[in-house]
Length: 111
Image (cartoon, rainbow, N blue to C red; front, side, top):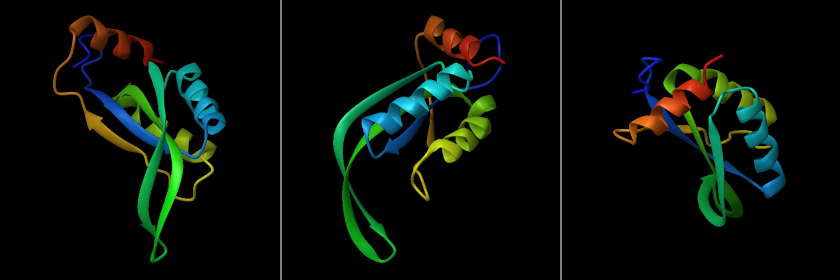
């Protein structure tokens, strides 16, 4: 938990088709205080079913560090910026972490 905010820290997984999309989304989320930090991992290969067919794509993965309090706004902003019809936006709870880091995430995502 972020000690000052009383909200839980989450890591939000967001796949993107390319580095440029990832950079655009990451910068917007941090600039707008929807995420304290966004890390881009990749390239990676995703295999998935879409419209009844098995597809595969080269993608990157964004790891956005945020809070449950900001998740709905973060998800809405990602949807607005993302080129996919149905982007992956999945929040994973942080069960434990270095208290000063969790406090920093909470502080950086405060409006």
